[in-house]
Image (tube, rainbow over all chains, first blue to last red):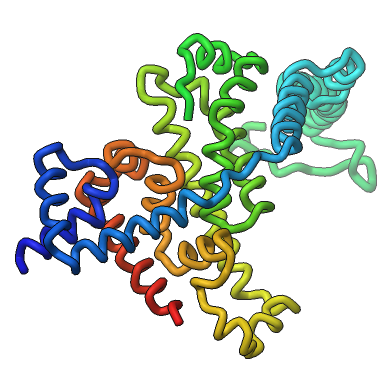
Length: 162
Length: 183
């Protein structure tokens, strides 16, 4: 009985698949001649195998290769396109593409222009305030309503010496 | 599957379409048939075959030619076919279409006909379909493609004893199912 169990396992695997060595094969064949149970199992397994062997191999449809070839060609074209853009695209890219260097240069120019305008404006203001200061020191200013304004020029001691 | 010369693999890996065509000729029958037996559907088998060859084309450059090309193709095929099968099963589950309704109706002719009286192809598909995908894959590689235990183990990255045990269980399950179908 133990022998049958072991042999039935081999029948479902190594024996059926030709993975047993010649001695094992001979031993199993001898057993099958004497054991109706194991012999029946072997016949059932062979019948099962016939089912697989009887199944026709399927022919691969022609269109499968055409589809694969087309997909590869399309993939290569896409790759080329992405690697080498046309002259027009290159020019467009050169003109319209924002580049950090150009953006920086533009910002810098605008900043300089603003600085020049501001400097001119401040210079005018400064010359006017210088004039005012001179006038203040003299004790009057044109800004005064009556043409004369007294300025607080510091502490009372300073005012005394003035 | 026929062996492929190393120079063919090398030329294909640098984009030579003739060489790639030779690889296709040598391997497409294996890929398509494994895909067909796994998915039981010719449209799915075509899709799997295309996917497998696109994967081979994309990855051939990085493939170590020293290692077994055949095992690599076997593995890509099995994985792609199983994924497709799982996806189809899921879609089938979510889809209630006319065919499913017809199939679900009780049919006395089909019930009495049993597995044994159907034609070979339908019987085979019906039997394979009742196995788990692990058992089914082992059986397809062994019975349909004739791979050795060692090759199956290498393809599925499992020990040889696991191959042996899966084959034993798959065959036992088929015997039980066939016995059930007998009048």
